Amino acid sequence: MSTESGTESLTSAVLESFAETPNQRLKEILGSLTKHLHAFIAEVEPSIEEWEAGIDFLTATGQKCDSVRQEFILLSDVLGVSMLVETINDAETPDATDSTVLGPFHMVESPKRGLGENISPESEGDICVVRGRILSVTGQPIPRASIDVWQANMEGFYDVQQPGIQSIGNGRGLFTADDNGEFYFRSVVPSYYPIPTDGPVGDLLAATNRHPNRPAHIHFIVAAPGYKELTTHIFVGGSEYIESDAVFAVKESLIKPFTTNTDPDAAAAFGVNSPFVEGLIDIVLHPEIHAHTPTHETTKEIVR
Ligand SMILES: [Fe+2]
Image (cartoon, rainbow, N blue to C red):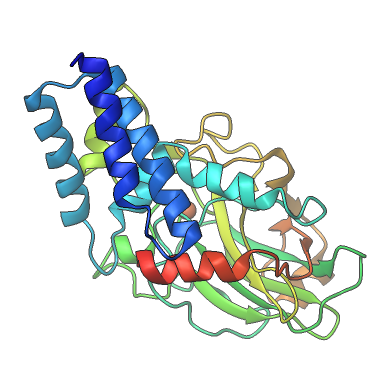
């Protein structure tokens, strides 16, 4: 038996082992995984030591995870997988605001805050006001949408990365848009930051001469009944690394200028000193999509 026919029959045997899988979507996913994984191994022809190094890397990635650290999302991010999944799902809703990656720092609940509240009360830096409207694809305001935001401080750290320095909830806020779909909150202008490099993903970046930095941004998850939930960022225009995000998440449409507003009346209205920095983003949601959701949900239950 030649090596080639041996590997092919092995692949067939594994595929056959999944033949009785009742959930067809799970069967499809496992079949594709088997075919691509076997093709990858056949192409690379790893030594036993290399295979063990791969197992050790994935083991270390899992062991680095805890309640506030998600090394597997980070790995998915730096390999471009998160962005690929986002892009595939985003294609269903071309008229909505572009989505981008969730990232690894949505690990704690954001504190509920009232419109206009400061999400970064413990952070120093340039005060900014972020504001906009939540709209449907027809341009109608969506009243009372929920807006979950989180960001790093001026030093480039999220609350969960600095226990004892930042309280959990600093840099985060859960808002409800008003009856006109409008929202605004105060914060500090975020900084670009390096993703955590003290784990296996950092080792991977170092071994491949890749920098770990992400351009300055604020994360959003926007949800409203009857609409598809949107996970996205607003990127600070002109930020360092805007052209070379370590997780490939920048979309041109999400880059917004953070400009200086010198109008003292506006400053008074937002409760900040004049002048202040202002970031504007209108977020467009697409009506909920029901097609194929049940199958995906079932798969999620099984794989979980
Ligand atoms: Fe982030």
